[in-house]
Length: 177
Figure 1 (cartoon, helix red, strand yellow):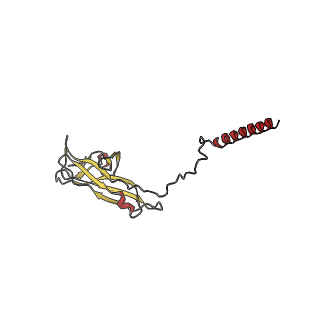
Figure 2 (cartoon, rainbow, N blue to C red):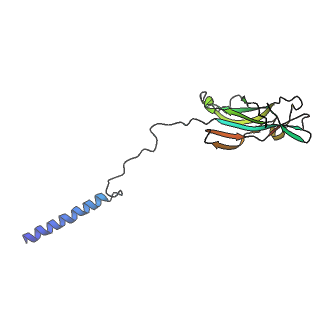
Figure 3 (cartoon, one colour):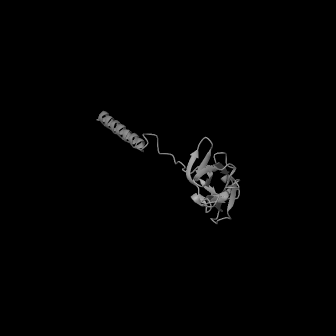
């Protein structure tokens, strides 16, 4: 009986040990112990530099039934910004480069220059500014050339690293219509 008792105790010990191994490996991670605590917040905050904003459009002259491009026309981009407390700032403006022979203009706005003053762009509009043609100098409100056209048709230019907005064509005329 002593041999039987020893064998019985040894068998019970093996069974208990196997239960302990099973229990230890049943922690949910397939025997690798408990999951380590991972931090979901980054150790440091990387702030993305805002992309430059490009604004493009056309400036045309309507004289009678004809509409022709104006070379040397200028558009004005006027923006409102808000400060870090949410208060609106005074409007500021930039001018486009003069239009090319097809009437195309382009202006670039750099939001990171505003960030030095802790400002964020709230809204921008494009306006007719100037026509070099004596015979076609009267601004019209076609496509909101006088009252201000909101920037629209946004797309991201990966190769230029820029956000591009387009504005519908603006029209000068010789008589205001």
